[in-house]
Length: 116
Image 1 (cartoon, rainbow, N blue to C red):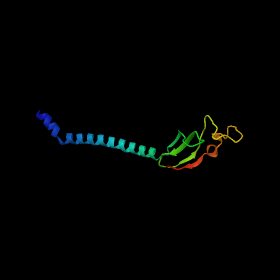
Image 2: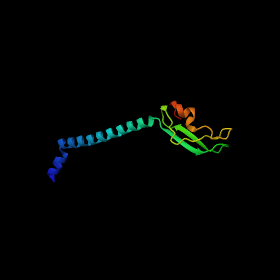
Image 3: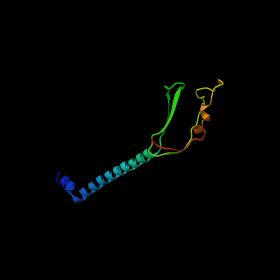
Image 4: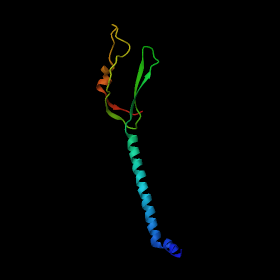
């Protein structure tokens, strides 16, 4: 028992334990800082969300909304329409009207889409 107390109270052993504990804390501090930087980079990226909701307006079926929830602007935004559809109301001659994919903003896209 006395030898255990001698080893545990030896300055060299205590220094070794301190080095191990400091290394452990340095390792985890580096991981936390790296993760924080990664989160901050992701948080600053633009985040575009498109949503479709039922419209409550007369002569309208749906509202399509595009929003940027990120903290920075999105550049060169393009809109791809998989299954094109006709817009409401139909033309005066009774045909289907204009297609969504023919709209200027859908064809040309946005050069810059600001957040907010």
